[in-house]
Amino acid sequence: MEPVEPRTSWTFVTQHARILAMILGDPEIRLRDLAENCRLTERAAQAIVTDLETAGYLTRVRHGRRNHYEVTPGTLFRHPAEGHHEIADLLQLLVDLDQPTPRPTADDHRKHGDGSAHSEARTPPTGPPDLPSRQRRDRP
Image (cartoon, rainbow, N blue to C red; front, side):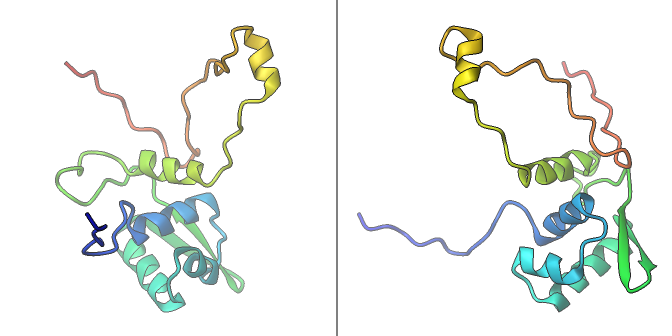
């Protein structure tokens, strides 16, 4: 059987989410860098930033010749299916994906004595101070 080409080239994360996550990671990021990282034109990146600002997901303040962006805390997803969830968790996930994950070393294996690299007990991520984690709900 020969391989089938996909009907379209799509991704799970939209350009809007990508740009908002990059702004969260670097509030002083240049429009040129947003465009380059997303493989967009500067005009397309500018249109997305304008969409996000108009919808209330971020604010933009001019500092000299540069823009300073701030992601608005407490904003919710736009689609009704997810509309009761804040975007903070998704954005933090995307920002964390850009950070290199430390790989287990031989010392980690020796520490535990069983050949496994158990991770140390972690505290839950708190997220950036301007985007509070949403309240966890008890589920049945």
